[in-house]
Length: 369
Image (cartoon, rainbow, N blue to C red):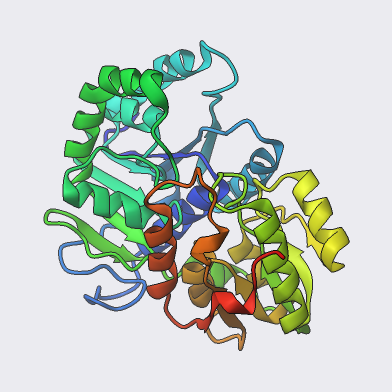
């Protein structure tokens, strides 16, 4: 492999989309201006990334919905001229080791590495042999906010919704500590490519993701008269009580005349069936990330979401289309007893920092009963 080659590792459809956005943002388009959306802030490099210089390694999860979306976004990446490699790293005890063995040499030779999930233990293991002079982190949604915050506090990287894990979990963390510490040191000097409202740490370089590639390739969308709701996996991650969530969706449907519900790729079939029966909503299982689906249209004139990535990304992707994005707060009473201590403040922070959105109080979606 040419040492100038850029090697990207993605584990979700959104991460893969954001690698395409990053490559588009690095394309030469005139002078680079600090602070301008789509342009890097002070300290960010403006070197372009030719299509044949970028090799994207997809590390797919096991769930069918994610894999299907990844294959479709991978097709878009190939249409752009990028090389895409599908590398299984899950699905068996030996799969991670086989993947590490297959990728280690390329990682050592890569001149630039792009990662979509700095919390991923597999990605952190890949960073150990890396010698790349440039390291880039692209958005994995709102997790980017927690990534920067934890790194700034000197904490080990841990997903905000995860709880303790007991004695076995602590033993695993102890054994993994040297790898985690190496990854944190490497990650402090990254270029951060994000749509999230974060302040880069010392040594980081910030580039704003304004979804320029998405806007240049799709749309503008045809607008319907109705309202679309955006689903969330907060129930599946154990953060929000299922009955409270169903009551909230029902209340939002009635209050805003919603007709469609765009399901999150991790939402269970049983939950979606219950939502449809209780609300009459048309359940839509998107085959691409919602930013692409909304940009292609048709899409409602109003899109309502709970605190999630899309309240930060859709205002960029739908800029100038006339679509209003609204966010409904999560009432602390909806949280389960197993929700992590960070859940309440994290979700509030996602809502409070969203730009160009309409705020809906949690009282607009009352709890069950």
